[in-house]
Length: 513
Picture 1: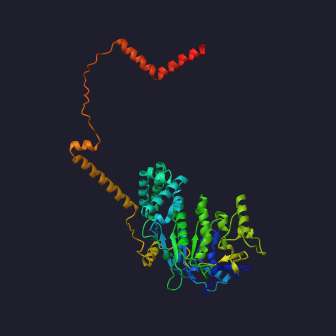
Picture 2: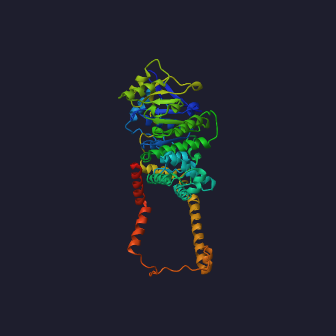
Picture 3: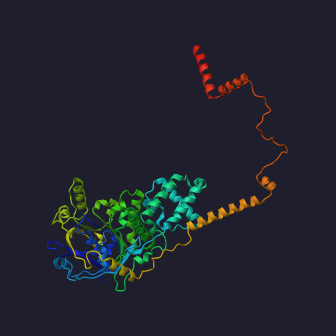
């Protein structure tokens, strides 16, 4: 039974095997390094290793390169000779080209099976982060979710939430008495943010059938774990949507999976590429949530590996929990870069053979500074490591090859068609229609009554005396010129101007004294 994943060769001649022990793989990890230093290939070979060991993997394909995992490498590739030479250098005697079981996913349903969740499952905290809401707006969203729960209004897709917000605005006076102030302006701001999300294609994320977590944790008949690849090249145009979706998925795994303690190998390994997008401008409550999930999800058998250009992109409380590390080159062009380089080097267990800080700045493409957890979870001594070559194709597969793999997938057809069952939108629409019909019936009933009955229902009473109608002719004699002038002066004195005149006269009199 395989108990470790071969990463590459270290030591003076790169002949010392550097391996990741599977029993410590759920202690999380970090892959860091500047652009073009080999992070994507490291991610690829780790995914291959976990799959070969029977561990399912979930990763996001930001650049489109990782689809090559579904196709075997080839001796015709331009890097075949360098790959074979490196395999010999690091003692990778069993190196051979191979394809791996891949399942493609896509929030937009274009390059993979559609991925959906419901608005209720996303929850108000993550949805507020996704919509970039202010604190008062987030409060209104929490009220909307509370009302939906109390009144049995399922929130499945965006139109459900939009309809509920409209209803909340129409009933804000009664809701404000119980839950606090509900501003029409704040509801309007939330609706505008939902419109922006729709324009970004985010509406496709919400609905049914929702993703079943067990479809991410499949093991193939040959014992290899499924590699789930989320197409993220188009998704990166909406970084907030990308980060929030992955955080939601991580939270769902934490909430749904049972406790397993310390298994011999992980139940799932989750790679979070472009990790800085998760933490950029994130509120403290969200960062605390990520830190809590990262700390506790280990006992669920899930390993989380963050991938970013610089370790400083990850908050310190979370960085301290990432035990398995692959650090590619960091370039120090500024004072801040040099500071980050020094801080990155200080997090490793020193190797007397070389300076960790110098090694991080000097390693070439395909080479890294590595440290893996060893016996009893103790960090291993840092080592300069040549990363092993990938067995699968380096680079993307074609569109036709992707389409064929999707059609042959066991999940083909399961998530393709949206199901729109009765939810908040339909329920609130029915309520509004029923209320309109009742009002119409009431109006028709009033019109059908006799005039006397209508007058009675309107609450009008007659004393018997009639008020004479006004006529164009007046029996009153026209006023004289003197009386008219007197009346006009009296009106002026009783008005604002008159009061000012009087105050002026009285003021002058008192000053004269």
